[in-house]
Image (cartoon, rainbow, N blue to C red):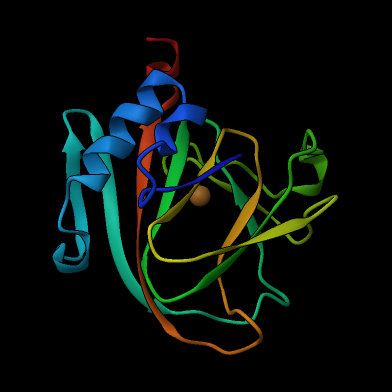
Length: 157
Ligand code: CU
């Protein structure tokens, strides 16, 4: 998991070249006015722009992906995301949906959480479980965010 804030001029220093390039492209967008829905960030790299209300984290399942990295960027509002960095025990997850590239678990082992402010991003690598969209201080609120789906093959290019 990688964290950063696009507002900083040096945000890319902790990022590999691929993530630095994609985040630079995000920074160049008019994020607040970005239309909702799926769109291309660049050829072969899709992103989904969403608006929704955060919910309490209790009882929510965590997801992990195998073929895509998530770059989750908060545009407005506040969002808490639970995550785990330990190698996941896949026996605790349900079946992997190859088509949609996800599987779920009721519990993240050695769970941590991070609170995103607008312009902050969290990058979840394959096999890093995460539960996004959680309310901060148990106060549900509307947020706008986007998730870039980065094919893992790009990491080696
Ligand atoms: Cu995800």
